[in-house]
Image (cartoon, rainbow, N blue to C red; front, side):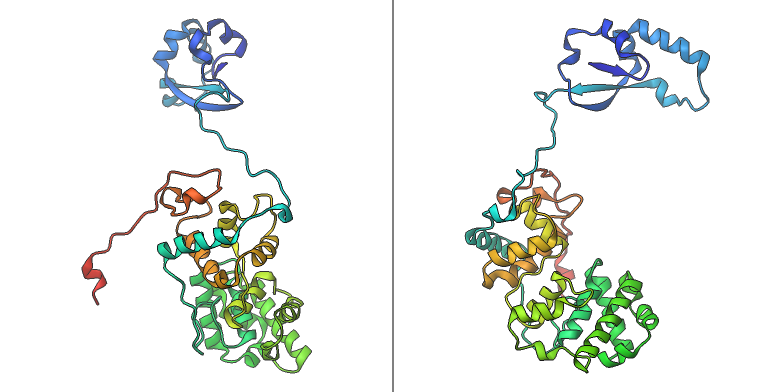
Length: 344
């Protein structure tokens, strides 16, 4: 069925020709056709339309509209119009058999070849990255809170500013929350994060008499998780980052990038739910020796190629292994660098 802006369905049905409904459908697609072509096919309707608009034309009637008429086609499923594929069949996480160990190792190798093998810091120096390795457990927790819902650049800048204002955690605990807020303003969500940091430091001091969590360093992983999780602002991702980066435990943090990429890969079903559920699933399935590398690699891949809005599927090295059903033909833009730029 063809519908236009200037005629009813009933009047148009008299003028339909044999080929007019070859492309028909459940959803409507708008196209523009020259008015001259429409006049040839529907001369009587166009004449009526023009007479009507000469009498009732509004000042906003544009010149573009007089040259082209929008026509809507209803497209049938058999037509050659690309349509959105249905998502994975709804299935509970416990029934999902991915990822297998072999899938993890294959993806790990490909992403290492693409993004480089992650380097795990073993030194005693603190990483500049807010979510990176820190010598102090509580300081690491503060850094991860700053990294929530913002970019790595912003969170690292905020952490550097906070550390400059308050070199040690005891000074930070005693500081008014407004001062902490001002120090971390560059990281975004300063009002919320400053309150969380202040409350965390005070709660730890109230529990143990010191502003430190170093007594947890040699405790079993599950005990550390339970101890950290009771504090407001310390969700599964924050706790997992402290375990992985600061304590060197085999844990697999799931942030927004890891959650998105692993879902598209088919490691968890699209109806798998929250990041917390994805964390529980992948932390159990991914081999311990790959957890650090895959966490870093999936974040790199999510930022560079498997982006949220327009993933660069045409440049994705794991395209053939990916279960994502809305793949694009977009190519990743590669910046050309001259040899002189690489020479210091």
